Length: 461
Image 1 (cartoon, rainbow, N blue to C red):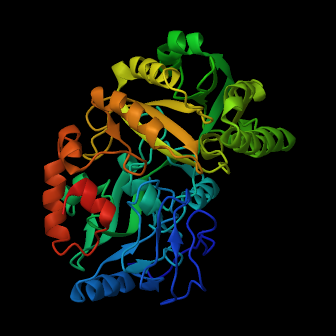
Image 2 (cartoon, rainbow, N blue to C red):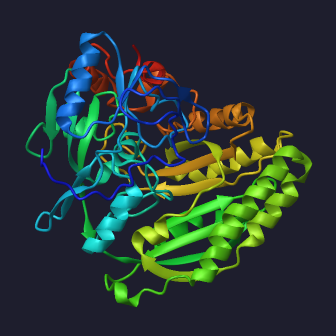
């Protein structure tokens, strides 16, 4: 493990996952997730500074017959990241460790926030190929739960992973790459935190590139009629349809040349107006109003779907992919076979229209190419992602349960970090290599040092 590092982290988890008390080693703490759905009070809190510190914590928990887990920033909506009796904080395991320009790889501590990695890569003239629309997660959390973007040659972060270092539940330090432990690299790229504690990750990177963003309102009929063409003619397409309306917002990104001097970013005033005032502050006010007075939600959604005017700009990739998300919510997302995506969207709308719910958040529609990551929602098939949201103060269960029946009927696979109702037997049916993963878990964490209640539910005891 290299002794030196260049810290890009701030040393704080900010508002995305909170701990009470001083945050120092052994301080009592209450951990809460970003959405507020999950909370825990571990017996012990440690902030390891090295792989050796992680090994010591894992061995101590194993010897005591206890549990340990490294937390991220709490952005999962499920309980996948809930800490064990010993909670490890990532604050001191942050920063880029090495850059290999011949192999075009970058290695970073697993506790580094994706936002900080993006900034460091930009400084180095490098970029990830694809990413999701937020970047507050730690690299370990984002990779382990299957975080993904839309389109491209690879949508998921795990599909861009070239290697990692991990402390298994036995305390063994394992380095997985194409030549060392390739079976672990294969199965463990989305590891759910069930195989070991990630300490470093190595990504394939590319020269820094620009994206041309075209954003505009789009109608329901136009969305259905042109979606396949939009996906075919742009590198990344993301659509948000507002329930109870025929309105949606389209974001279509096209890759440009690598000459960043040619970028034409949004003016600072326009970004503040559109992304801060309209997309966050005004949307937050309207969402809160809709939660208190559900009858106004259809009107609010019509306003929201038209609030942003058409705009076009170009910028370095991560500044286009990533948006600020200040309004808290709960989310369920499934990947269905690509060819069924629009039909499933229509069925979901029929379910929404048939009930008296008032859904104040849009439904997000994205696509992704097939990948070879065994627990990926896109493993072995092109997919369409459909994501459903409600404000964080609203009971999601009636809405999500009803829509989930539609998604499951179309062989959908749920996002590992987002709400769903599937247990281990259901997940075994939709993930072809599920049993291989469970066998690897038995080998690397036989005493279930890394377990929590959610992992027992989705993987079995």
